[in-house]
Length: 402
Image (cartoon, rainbow, N blue to C red; front, side, top):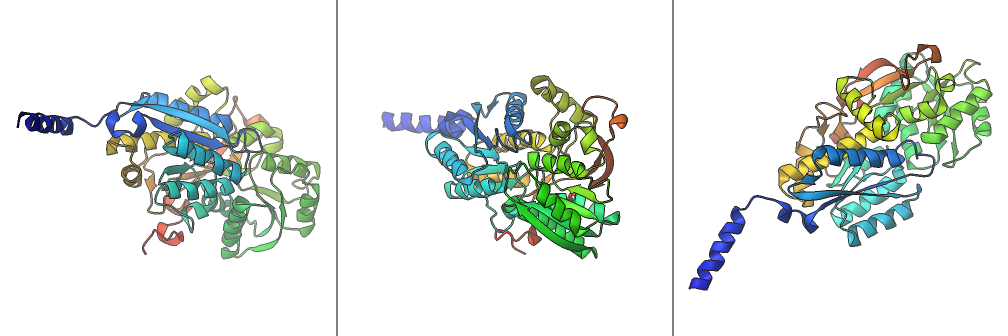
């Protein structure tokens, strides 16, 4: 009887204890940042996204529910098989709880599929394909920062409104490029414009001369660059050498961020219209975060890096609110909690996993217009989140009931 009483008392005492590290699997929270750190997207996200993730952990206090938080990272080399092998090892043997960033849509789709199978959280900030929240959505998958629809509505929509009603696309030959081109082409055609043609090229090409000459000879008012990172920078640089813009055609950089503008320089990038979900000089909050980021990296963050900070922060908030890192409980909180941080205000996560927030249309300044280092953008317009992103019921996600 005495022994029974002691066991009961111990159970009662244990149940009354607050949720601390005991509610956290393996006694710690481990987040993997998996992205391109050596290829065409190394500046787009790369090691700078890893630093943003570490900043988020430090700003959160280094612990959640009493458990330490650890960031690990790896370079997937833009190859879905390598990314899947790393992710599987992280999940199976290294106690990684969530994987984030995931630049390159083919990689993100592969890792999201594995994460769904393993019942793990993934939050994509670096890849763009709307399939992530469409036909390949996951109850544990989330898409932060931007997608191909938001880029098409922003940059594509602005140029069509300005009279750019005929387009020719230079498209990188994988899921991201197809999605970006298709989303923009739909918008152009829905607005009464025409798509005159398309040429596809392999990721990481260095010579764009034949593709640019095909686009030039098509006579379209707008040459749409359905690519990103160094591919976009090299396309713009070589287009200038061929005198394409000087000849009256315009370039639409459908995914162009601060990192690529900096790498290309204002002389070459001036006048390009682009869409980002974050700009360091937007307001006091963004400037404060950017200055802290600059002190540790010697560069200002783009929307991928700021988005990674936001994703890590929101994941930790969700664990804290749930009192556990159990996947179902955390996913529920991620779907329900508003997003208010350095990246956005009043962001909301839809049933398909898409985080809806305002996007911003900018034009790259001329060199003489820039007043200080990293002063690269002129603000043109705000694209409300409800316009920038597909509604959940229109996404094609099988988890969404219409």
